[in-house]
Image 1 (cartoon, rainbow, N blue to C red):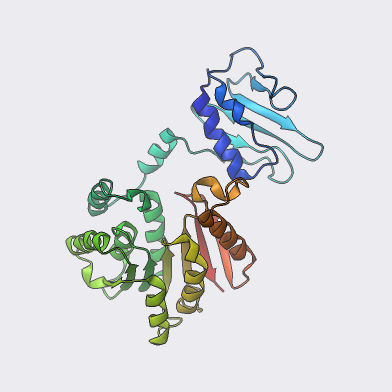
Image 2 (image 1 turned 135 degrees about the vertical axis):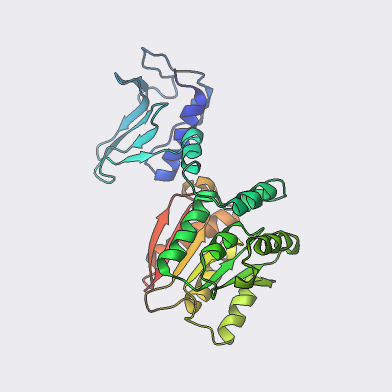
Length: 308
């Protein structure tokens, strides 16, 4: 049997894929799907009947003249199958809680980061902290670049900045911009405990002002890596300033967090200021020939930009 919750999970995935049709909200009224019958109500009849195939998967199928796709669910191996020319029949993994737990079980999280993560979980705004798998990716990017000079816009309690500082060489420098004094105190405590405080240049204040001062100080094109996880409505401003600060030779990287914004970016019914600003920023990045980009669906979505 497939429960309503499993179907809701895939509803979210459909939205992320920006498919041509999304299931009606009345779908939420289903308590279960019969193991032998195709199920439909008057609101769904002729549109997307639920089916169980021989493999035991439960799915929804619809088609049109130009495209057709099928969404399947299997408790052991959930995925989305898009069956048309545009997506090339690619099986896209849908991250369930159990699968995400498995992913986290394969993250090498240093003990000091675990301690910081657990302390942050008890604080207001803890959802702003990046996930362990995100932090691991950021640290790896810094290592691949052999970066020595980094910037972080939006530190909060320092989980991502600590992950970066831990892999910087002893001569490395991380400029950490944050306007929340209380959060910074937590971050500095862990920098010190981890023995990396000498690598971190903490900047308390508005990030845009800090970045402008670095440019005026003659530090343009001298940074290897930057991570942005701050005020979403200012992403474009941060990006333009960081583009001046990261290196050109062997292109510097700028990574922006929350580019999927809980899936809201692809929902035309959501038009609040933050969502619209992220949506517009993503569009600008797509069209910006100054950088190569890769949007990665990890955490709440990150876009990795390489300066050309």
